Length: 491
Image (cartoon, rainbow, N blue to C red; front, side, top):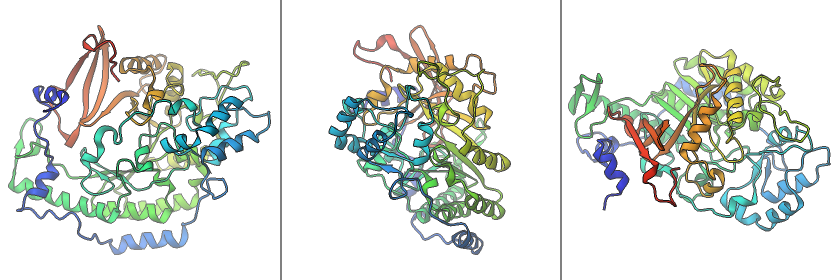
């Protein structure tokens, strides 16, 4: 039987066929549909890669015994317990004992890892501060670890291992490593292996891009029609718009954990396959800012010299303003969030921000993040974060509702969609039009839903991005909360 949600989408005209454009390409014997042929890097591309290998390549330390940061909850707890009383204590003795006793369960849900730079900044607050730390675990996280193996069913849109093609752009898992591990990580299934996701073979990804774009050209000539209303070519069988792939998101894990030579090689491969925008999803600016050293910028400048039509977008995941600026607390140790107060930008991220901003004609810097209970679910926290990202020339993109990861109930708590929408709108009070660009987004299997309003106990949603780049005239959905059962909540 067809699920109710799918029936509703079909009734509204949002959903017609389970098959995607790629499925037609694979099934159609008349098309050259081999996505696995070997991609050849040009002589120019090999020159760039070899130069980076010989001149701008090195290992980057994140602290700890192995250079990978402080790994495992027990190592982190032992480190924190050795710190003197001039620093804040993140755990009571009772909490520490419970965490030790439940260490295996904590590690199984999401492995604990903290970089030296991030921990040093976290400790740069008064000893009595109540610290809402997004990295250090709490025992409550494992009281209910229900959730989905693969939130939003992303594997449905993976046509080759490690690559997602859900929208008009691609997402590639280029790394399965981060300098620190966020407790609420939306990709914890990639780290744990429970969803069979794996790292992408970027030669295969480049072949996919090249082949797909060639097939688009072929289908435009043989099996499409020109839609006068939207002014685009449309595939006759699937009804999908025929667009070339021109953008890719390097994700994981954190791509900035890769050596310079590997990162540049992946950039060269995708640029030569036809990509014009490369997004690098990273939190390394706050986890390990020394990673952005002269060797890295020299490598990036060399890439830009030879591929100057490719734009780079660093997509940060800064969930709290005090990841970017030094904290302020009152006499009781409570954090203060005031857009009119004087704050200081973290010293070790200033050179990175300056280097990015010097290259603004071809490098962008974006922030997107989820609302996490106990971390940023307060209007003043969100307001200060939006204000300071704008001050630092970081473009505010999306604010996400918490996904159905394992343990999501702790990270979401009572923040239903209507509550989160009100938080975001309240946070915009006092901000100007260029400062208040955050929008609340729900990530679903069939696309991104933007929450645009709340009235008479109903939530209004708009289709922000639908799968396969489709767009519909009737893009508004109204959720009547009065129709929910007493035990139900709209998350």
